Image (cartoon, rainbow, N blue to C red):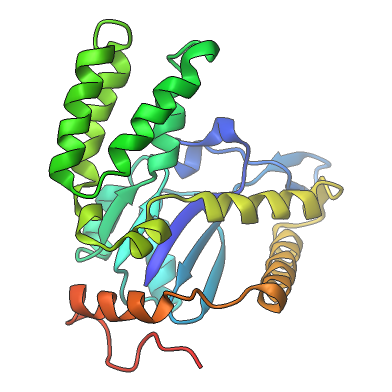
Length: 259
């Protein structure tokens, strides 16, 4: 299963562990007339059909993956996530064969915080060029050119890029079509935005269960609307065949094809 964990919250919350997150817009009104924020986490994946898990979380990623196992998720192939604390360790324990790819887009956004606005477009263009090269070796060459040009002005960005590139080295084992599916969590952010739009007028809920029911109904509505206008990827058959090559021991022969 390809899976992309993400938090339903604003951009300032990214990169924190689950127990540190206070995610709007949902709060739960307690019996003592106190409103408390509770985080809501979703994991979205492709498993031949579109799958969504709406999770209530108050612990680390270990709790998330144990919950997914209880719900019947036995195998993960590729995991794409933001820079979330503890996810690598939890994956190693619960899904040791899964490949973890940090989100390339979020890495670029994080690095650009060190760049003045007037220069961001130029720096972003160079950084995107590193990740869009056809091979890991060419990416290393592009990074060397980036280092030579920007080391004196932005040493923090150069250091971040040098640390980040080996973490996504396995991405170049895949075809361009499969890489486009797993290099970013932007599809997650699109769903998160729709969830916030549909729940922003319900700032207080009588209980956590009622909030979870609301989230479930909202996600079902988003999924039904997307199925009404979305078409299957034209390259999905080729991607399925490629996944069977890379993960021959993990995937059953009948997995993937769509009628």
